[in-house]
Image 1 (cartoon, rainbow, N blue to C red):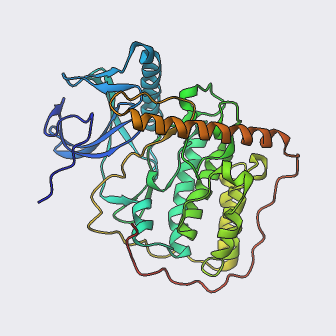
Image 2 (cartoon, helix red, strand yellow):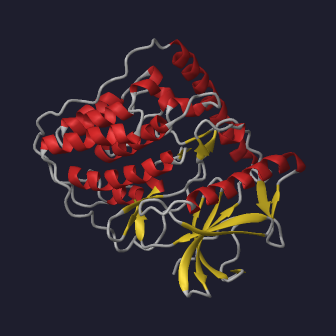
Image 3 (cartoon, helix red, strand yellow):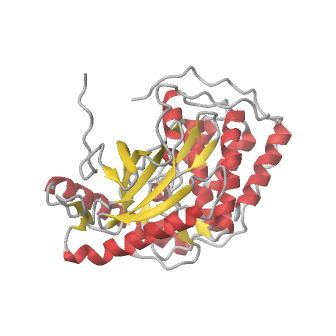
Length: 386
C-alpha cells in the first residue's frame, strides 16, 4: 500500500479548525492550500481554502502562518487583504456556475474561506482521459460558464486566471468556475505581486501592470480553454506568438473534427490585440449561439465523468509570478531556476510591450460568418495522457 502524500506547509490531517476537521489536501497552489474537511455542526463535507503564499510565508511549528522575513510582511498582508476581498466577491454571487463561498474566518495568522464541496473532476482531468470532446458537449460546458462569467463582469470584476484546471465539472456534467485568487476590479489599482500569468491562457495585456484589462482579457483565456479542447495541446504563450504564431495552424488542423464557425470563434477570442477581440461576453456568446444555430449543432447529453477520479474539487494550481524574485532558503537550486524563468518572462514581456505599442490601429474584427459544418467526428475512445 502506498504512503499518503505529505504536503509541505499543510496543516496536519485530522486536526481541527473550529468546527471543521481536516480530512485531506485537495490541492496546493501559489497562494494557498485547499483542504477537504468535515463540518461537525452540519455533518457535511466542505472545501476550505487557506491563504499561504509559498513565496512569502511559511508554516511555523505552532501551526501559524508567518512571513518568511520582515521584508515580506507588507506583501503578505496585502495578499491577505486581497484574499479577504476574493471571499467577499464570491460570497455576493449566487450563481450555479460560480464557486460559492459560504463563510470566511481568520485563524493561525491567516485567512480561510469555506466553500461548497461537490463530487466531480476538473476539465483538465476530463481532457486528459477523453481528448477531443464532441462539439455539442463543448458548447454544453462553454455556454453556462459564459453566463457565470458575465455575472462576474457585471459586478466589475475580472477572473484573470481561467484555464482547464480552474473549471470544475460536477458529477452531473454541469460546469463551475473556480479559483478567483487572481480576480481584481476592472480598472482597479495593480501591484507587482498581481502580475501573474498562466502561459498560454494569459492575454498580452496581463503580462505587465500597465496593460488595460477588461472582459476581453477573460475572453482570451476562455478562447485558450477551447483551443486546448479542440487541439489536445496547450495554446502557445502570447509572448512566443509575437515571434512565431502557430495558433492558426493548430486550429486549421482541427478543421476535420470541429466546425469552421467554432474554430473562427476561438480564433477571434485569441486575437493578440485586445481591440480585435470580442469586447463583452454577450458579444462573443451571441456569435457562438448564432453559429450553433446555423450549423445545426445541438446541445446534447452531458459528458461522462470518470467515477474513479470523481470525488475531488479541482485542485488549486500554481500561478507563475512574473515580477518577483523567489526566495526559498530550503532549495536554492529551485530558486535560481524560477529566477531564470522570471527573467525570460520579463524579456518576453518587454518584446510584447514594444510590439503592443507599435501595432497599427485597425478596425476590430467582426465575428466569423456562419459556414456549413463539416461532418462531426465522434470523440476518440477515452485514454489517459502521461
